[in-house]
Amino acid sequence: MKQTASRNTIRDAFSFLELQVALVLLGIALAGLVPLVVMQSKQLKKLEARLDHTATYYLVPSTSTWARKLGAPAAIETEASGGGAPPPGAEEAYEVAILSLNKSLTSETVEARVLLTLTEVPEEE
Image (cartoon, rainbow, N blue to C red; front, top):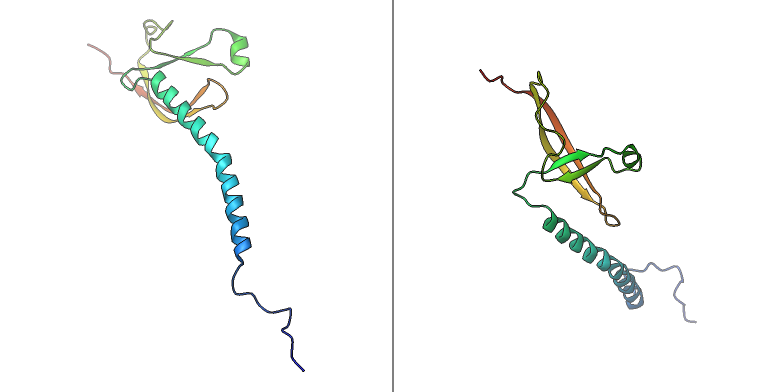
């Protein structure tokens, strides 16, 4: 009488069919990521074209309270508008360091995280 192999044997490897299924799933996942990468690179090119590295940009607060309530608290401009000369007795200034810039993929908003450091401006004699 022949002995049959037990069905509870330990498998040492995976089959070729399992490898094919894994590669198909990997291909589907990568095909889903490609449009996101292309869109991100286009947005980056638009942002780099819009912002000049040599220019100074100012965050100008909106004068409309409704614009601030709807999430548009400031605009990025190359010239300071409405600021004019500082009021008399203002002897302080802020040093601004940009920590990060985030551009939305679905809208034209730019979010900037900045670090403000209050410094005193020396008085002119």
